[in-house]
Length: 132
Image 1: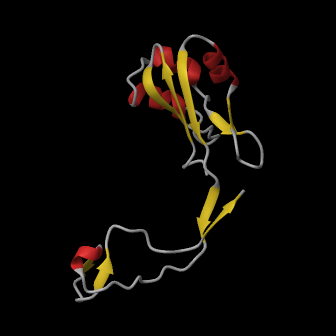
Image 2 (image 1 turned 180 degrees about the vertical axis):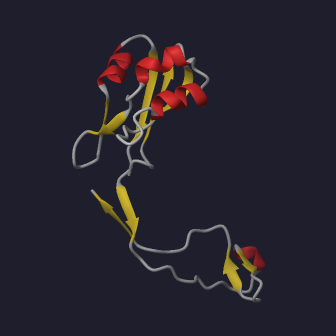
């Protein structure tokens, strides 16, 4: 899942924890805009990074590949640390259902406006299927 996949690096000039977005043909300036507006990099220094980012290496989506310029940056001394986290494409295919609670308010349940005991601060149950 592109939204759950993270590529981040520490750059000698731009700073630490620079998050690299996936390449998006509908928004090729995403990384450039992030560098300028989120990380405070000057537009001149960020200019070469237009159209840069990452994409899935193949159909399995188990690894990512950086664009050529970012690959060269990783090989240089400019990038000290590169961290990636690839998440599978998952979808909640189950139906949400109510989870019964006891009457003990200390058991993670609370009373709603209708006077029913409901769980709080938990995800609703469902079945997640992932494309491995």
